[in-house]
Amino acid sequence: MSKTRHTDQRVSIPLARGDRATADLLAEAGFDVRTDLGQHFLRSQDAAYRLLDCADLADEDQVLEVGAGLGTLSGTVAESGRRIWAVEKDRRLGSILQDVLRRFGPRARVSISDVREVDLDDGLVAGAVLLAIMPFDWELSVVLTRYVFASTPKVERGLVVVPSRTLEQYQEASEEASGLRLREVDGISRSEFWPKAPEALRVVSIERRR
Image (cartoon, rainbow, N blue to C red; front, side, top):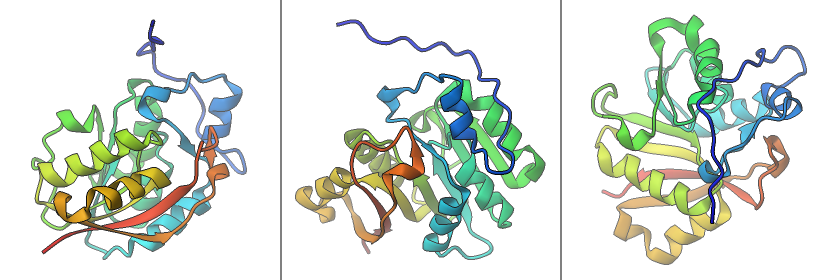
């Protein structure tokens, strides 16, 4: 079976202004979404504010975002005055993400790489918080969530958007085995994303078991 090929050509799409979401502009431009990355883009900044509220961050918290995409969530974090490290694997989105975060200077760091190839200890401070919309491929979201917490002790807790089956997988496999405690704290509509999420989503709090 042949695999879909994706070029590394960066996307030239103007940043959203007014009521036009960058995700909608990408849709109109015929952007080739990478389904192998479980790629979906947040359309609403209001939803980003809601996730930020659910994360219950302290002013001094540093945030790690995995799969930062178009920077809708990471830009909201930076605007709140917190430090953000935005990691995005799809190189085509690099220029958009960097444009969104450039004005925040050293408070915002961007890495265009697979998070599993990034030294998270080199850049995070103790007590960092994972705040991310994980891939909508539920198996990949399980893998990446576990990776972040296993690869560095500096990430102490998190708030993630995941497919329902990701949460179910943790519950069936026993959260104690992973050393993490997951708790659903909110929901989010599938229509908040482009493309629309293929299944129900959950907003989940993650804590390390002590």
